[in-house]
Length: 446
Ligand SMILES: NC(=O)C1=CN([C@@H]2O[C@H](COP(=O)(O)OP(=O)(O)OC[C@H]3O[C@@H](n4cnc5c(N)ncnc54)[C@H](OP(=O)(O)O)[C@@H]3O)[C@@H](O)[C@H]2O)C=CC1
Ligand SMILES: O=C(O)CCC(=O)C(=O)O
Image: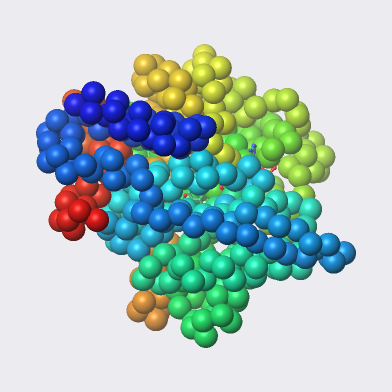
């Protein structure tokens, strides 16, 4: 079976040369599936892997827009509709200058398994543009979003493909895109998630990825008879996922000592409390400033060259971007006594870092399991939109919590069943894969 997997990996390498992130994600998943493929030879016989690594559809388009000075700019927009075996394509949109087909294909590929783990009926997709919202006025962002949606609208729909936010796409951008979709189609539908609460959004969706990640980590700690009370945690990023990771960790009695952005890291030895976190939310979500301002206001340390992983911690929550924990970072974390790494971001640990975590018995949660709370709550937003009603805050948070407990249990049980207890990466990959593969088999050669 290893040879079969190697052959599929070689096909991807040959077909998509230079797509390093996509290849990294494919290898990480495929090699852990070998025991499941041995138990289910029908998957190989029906070319499931060959079909899984090829997106069902990829859309690439021009996004022209005008800045406040009347100058014309052209960005490139994408939507990768990866797999619809278990539901409409579902996954976020990323606006960041680093966006390439490789990045979006790795994200779309991961999303397929993540969405399967939620047990909700959602296929996987991802999209975005190489547009940089930083430093742009609200009007410029609005014109960009309207232009982006002017092409994207014909490819999406509440039963076809339901995008949401990701890096650089939050409530503001979803609002502008939703407005343009409505204008073009004359329909008010749940075509996007992460909508504003006053117009179809779900309570707890903004909090969901961060809260969900902490709920997953809490379950991992319980397997060792531990809780967050008194634990020191390092968090990277300072956007949506990071903010609500800090909020839930603080509620559960942990001390969070770091946040970061692409310019540097803040180290607050006293920890972030509610008031400090409110400042971060205002700074990042409204004023769209740099995290350094936090250090200036609260007298915390700020270092352009320090990484959150250099700070001694019990638990680490990478919540910024892919490949932000290298092998050297993993070594530092382990040396400093870190016993849990829970990925809020997608693929933040390099393969070498993951190997080190597993070899050193660090509790390691792969993003596709631990950050699935965001898309799961998007699924709950879709349900509420279909039913034309809104659930209360406690109801949505409780559903999210239950989903995360279940994902944890599924990953743990599957890892044990396939002979590697405690290997959540293997458990997540196999259980997500089996759900998708079975649906693909049922639906014939499509
Ligand atoms: N939002 C969601 O619901 C979900 C998000 N995720 C994943 O979580 C991660 C964070 O997303 P989210 O919080 O929504 O995004 P945001 O745009 O809200 O925040 C991203 C944060 O990460 C930092 N960052 C981004 N790119 C880099 C980089 N190349 N190097 C260093 N720092 C960087 C940003 O800093 P700066 O401002 O300087 O760019 C910012 O602090 C991503 O990996 C995303 O795919 C996963 C599941 C769901
Ligand atoms: O809420 C969603 O649809 C997608 C969230 C997302 O982009 C992710 O899980 O990486």
